[in-house]
Length: 556
Image (cartoon, rainbow, N blue to C red; front, top):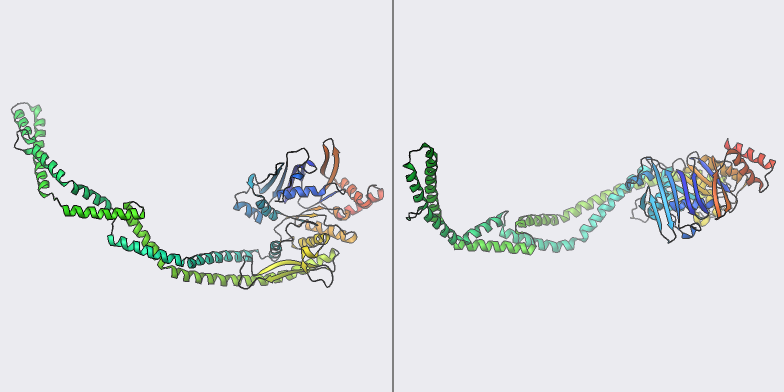
């Protein structure tokens, strides 16, 4: 429900801060006092179109805040949670700023948002009914929502919507597979050629690194042999300067010295001589068995050349060729199974369509039963509202054969006829402004206990009525206030007397110009305002007594 509304520098309002009760609030004032300005400001926070002409004279910008308390399990709370905009205390702050340069900014709980999102969210919070604008009653989606809520069909409607979403996703995937068959055929030829080429070469993991090492060894065979032979010569050549001869001479020199401290050194040198002898023998064996193989070198270089060419062709590193071959084979397998996938998806699509048809048919039957009851109850309320000749009807029109929608197999629309013999038609074409307001009131009274929108605004719903009908309108609004928050702008004392909260709008002159103010009335002030509405300019004892009686009777 709406808890607060703050308006700054908007139209004739310099500053206004209002609090609203949870039941029925009436708004009254002299003709031309500016009662509708408050609703215009509220509408801006609900996504209405901005106009820089509405900025107060002398101000650079207009700013409006509206604060709503939302049900944690309702559609509005779900919308906030989906966008991570939930506040801890279930309150939501809508803020709209209009500047002289034509810019308009909107915020939800302090987060910048689009006007479109504000309007979408606003439709979940509040319905505004007036002679000139019915924010949602003229929309078919509202007609469907009210009927489904009235018939307690929310669970069935959501289940149908989920099946529809799955059906459309499956249908899209199937269409993509079928439409891509020609492209897949060309792709299949390319992949087959690439797979055959890679299979012919049988390139294994780590093969490139091993071949590169072998190629380096084979290409440098002569240098390697020469260096090994030089090493052997240094160790054991006939020259007296070889390593073994030098070590032997050192041992001979030390062995003639009688000193125990040299024993470890002699032992190390003896071990070194043995290791040099063994290393020399192993080196000689290495040289004798070293294979200088030009043919093997040519094979390795040819093999590496082929690997490098394939890597360049596919623009990858040579080490990644085995992974590429695996990916190509996997894609080939997937393409080969495309016919199976098409068959599987076709079967799944048919199953989903059958499930949809069963759910939609069942939902349609239940909707028609609920529609018949709703028609009867709204028509009865219209009689109470002085529209005895009116006939309210819910048209459930089947959609085109074979077409599926997220909301079922029928279009739902409220129709009305206001004169005998008149064919029922859309609300905005048949009903006048005053009639439309009373029709909306009848619908809201009947659906109040099931509707997900808990704040209803009626702007001059009582135009063109009076007497007993005015009393009925007031009583119905008060009754509706037990189930929803009602804000009603009225000129009728019979309606004003029914309010739980009463706000009076006045327009006065200031040094800076005309300014509008809104004030909550005490019980005495309520009676005086009702008397003014009854008796005109001059307030008499009789009009006060009449007003007090009307007020006391209504409040009972």
